[in-house]
Image 1 (cartoon, rainbow, N blue to C red):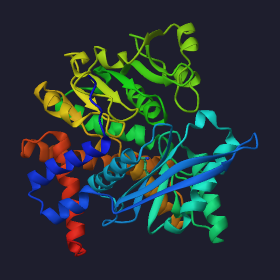
Image 2: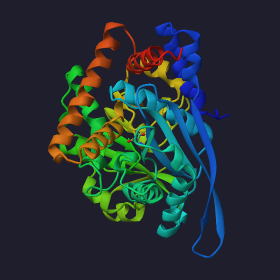
Image 3: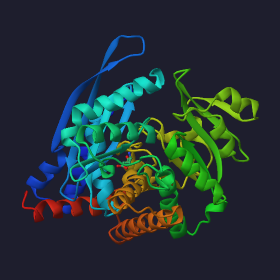
Image 4: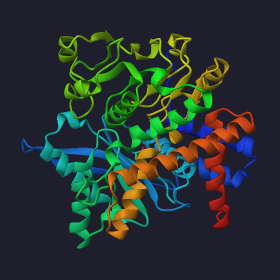
Length: 427
Ligand code: GLU
């Protein structure tokens, strides 16, 4: 029987484990186990056919002891409040592990943007802000794009906020389009950040990236830019799996000699689904299901959704795999960690690996505050520096204390947040 995984239970189990390692006091552990604030609300949207649909939405602040809450807004048909709770908690750890002065939050709307016209999406975005605007503020809570949301959604949200507040507040939302308060490099940042962390790990293992092969799950923004940088640095990406909304199923697109990323991008829709007919015409193998995981490669990059690597699928992972780079949030369930460790696979944890997006969001806020924007090279240089420093600190602690990389990342992040909570006198 398939186990049902609840990401919030996973997130709490991970925190409890590290609380034990850190000998955290009960009050701080209790505080960090729960979000500090939750807003559940409904958004009525006038549809193009004249009807009105009611969408359920959330915004959850896990912790803001280190700075304003930060985190994306997801549009997903299977969104649940517990997923948003878990993701808000992971945002707290993510900001802390890369040491940026922000807390953790997350938002979500239960909807499938595939089935909404652009004007319906615009009304949904504006409705989200109309319901929530009193709680949003550059100094309180700052949303960003996430699964199935993008710069256009952020700009509609910003515009609604600015109309309501009668002024310019570019620091209230990040991931905006370049030229309208966005930062160069933000689109690339999460995917590139994964590869900066991977480079750090490979160099510690004495492996050259150009000699490695990889298989990727998910070809949304994160997967695409991870694939671009990985292949530009000479890595061979053999397989990419993507979700097809049309078929309600996932496919793995494979080419043993290496995928041409630019070509695959030309076959994908705006939500990351690769058109399998076009891929087949171009000579790719199209494998049904999630065969990305059983490829004979050095590196697996899950960059789709949570709970993709479970004990049920672990046996499918090839003995050749040396590294799992978690591009998505929570792609591996906690019960896999000991098995992965026993197999000698290095797991680069999600909230370290995919912190590039929020790090660049922080740079975007800084640039908005100054009203002066850096060149792309400058942004990416700062991003690589921040990600590499964070990787080094985690790696050093992991090796020094014989911890796996996930536990080491948690120890660093949770101690930073616990310290802020204590210094503020909350516990
Ligand atoms: N949604 C991204 C994440 O999960 C970015 C969040 C942000 O930039 O605030 O990390």
